[in-house]
Length: 171
Image (cartoon, rainbow, N blue to C red; front, side, top):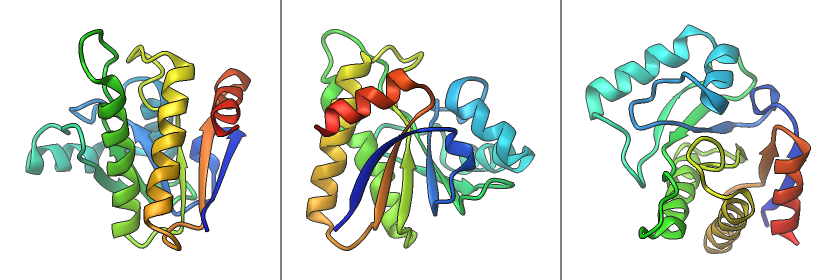
């Protein structure tokens, strides 16, 4: 059974198999979680991301790009592009697809532990409480359908507000 836990901290310092990066579609790590990951991991992160986009094109919804984690404790980074929150689109389904892509990528690479940030809840404008509920729900559903795949999923808030939103979503 997978332990799903919310914690406050710096995702770049966690000793897990994989961390998830809330990326943009071009894998240019210029702000937010992506910039922190790129800085902590070193130039290999942007270089590997550039190589990925040259080979595959822009990151699309439901797709995960995987790169080495560079100087971070994690083994790999799973880059996913969450939805920009907009009225008139199925934001929830899009975010669920993004979370599922990250979890699938971790499973395909035999990861046992994963750290997830609040995808789309930053500059992409997804309301924090709604985003964390979707992320938690999608993670729980995936883990129920894939028992004994992941030992641990950490829902990581950089600050208390995000961490508390994850805790509230976990119930």
